Image 1 (cartoon, rainbow, N blue to C red):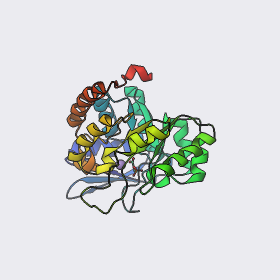
Image 2: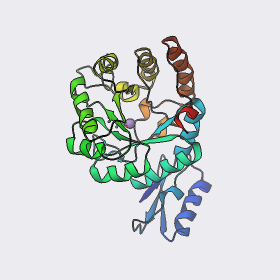
Image 3: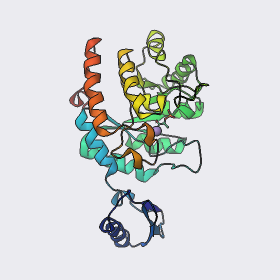
Length: 293
Ligand code: PEP
Ligand code: MN
């Protein structure tokens, strides 16, 4: 197991991590690098409680978004990455960190399940199970998610039509799970100006064809921080039932998707704007108390 210290971590902070590792009965191997220091934990027998080693980044992010008015914290314990060499998520220790963030903030937790085994663990802990774009047509996973007893956030596939998105949702409904939220996250296009082509039209199209709520994810939809805010505003104006955006206390240090992550103060400003836009079309942003947090 490798603990990567944040950029600019002090020798004291590195020493603290070494002490915790040794206290737990393992051997610590500091590896100073040009940019940051990593500390190897030698002898991990699978019982290491990683939550003792985290640098409170997720809790810090959770507090900041909660203060700005977020009601759900979405973070990936398992991350579907295009490259096997990219950060793959923290796995089950990541779930424990999310549970801790819920404990400390009262935010509901949404996290992705990538396979059936992971789905069992996610459904046990999370308040909402995310099925990611790459699994939108993983029908066996959808069937299990339909029986998992938790609400499901179903993201539109990278090249899926709206019709296919709705049919995938039917797999969940057919298993008896009626708590389904759809998510528009952009589709692949010929244009490289943005990461994906954020399909705003999908929002009114889904509203016409289905009773299911649909939220928008302009972070993956555009892939670029400065495009996330205008498209989030536009999605609310188009009738989206919610917005999911990536936020990071220090986006340049993010292990995944830093370029599309908002700074916390940008998120707070966006929330203020979203309230005004929602009101202009006769809607209201849910207050944390209204969702039982
Ligand atoms: C995500 O939500 O972090 C994610 C990987 O999104 P998508 O499945 O839409 O690519
Ligand atoms: Mn992401």
